[in-house]
Image (cartoon, rainbow, N blue to C red; front, top):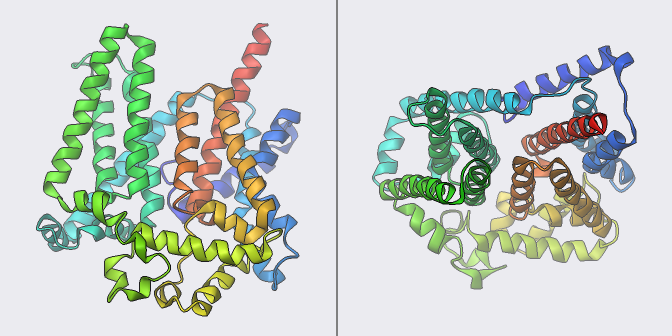
Length: 411
């Protein structure tokens, strides 16, 4: 499970899961509730099938649809599991394996790039450090950090489930895993993931402490947790002061240049990761999407149409870098028109419905984090984003269905 972020191991794991499902087909049982959840989680794939006619190339449409096939197959495989799952045990295994794996990869990256790290500490090219770490594993920076953000939240959840005694081994081990994941979160340092990781960890800490302790003790323990996170962030910023500039100036700077990025002498160096670039992309995407607002340009052709629009409107910086949409709502609007946006809202809404049905804090935080991240990225066009979201929602759905079955047996 800790290999979800890696394409090849994740693909092998999914194929094995599907193979086991096929081999045990006689034991499969899907009631209406399961099929309802499967269809909701498979909306991205169903949209590809529904709009297969709206592409110039049928072959490209099939290839594009294959990417979303996991949104159908993963829920079928997981929800067909015949036994009740131990969610806490699954979370513990995921926490341990993924945290240690990332730490190992980070150490390899450190020892093979000592010169780069010396430069980072001197304030040189600090904006690259997280992306270079992600690239050393063949991964996309924002996608990797979204995985790490949820890992931090899971580690915090597991930490709060341990006996709150400083000499307790389980408490110490869980605390170390959280600290390792949190340091990696700060190192990769993509904005949305950092904010979600910190906010989600604090919410979990507050909610879980309230369940275990009195009001006074829970407030004290929560404030200690806030202090620990604050000290870590402060210490990291002291080492890399560029981050203050990144969050306070670079992110929102030059907003008067929307649609005029070529006026910069070197836009790649000045505004590549700035909000002004995102807004320029969104403005172009929305203008293009309005011309075919009902059904869009098709899932296989939309990206090509957007790049052509960059060239037509003489936005050379955007055309040169062939930027994707970086917003899942606008991405679906461009591909499927308003129909796609409405179904995407249903898709994300189903995640919130599942979180309230399961009554599990991690599910609610996961869905909230993923939806917020998709305002600044388009994770449902990436394999790692598709698998990440579908796997966890399927797992939380199975947990909810098992809990529902237990309640029915008791009554």
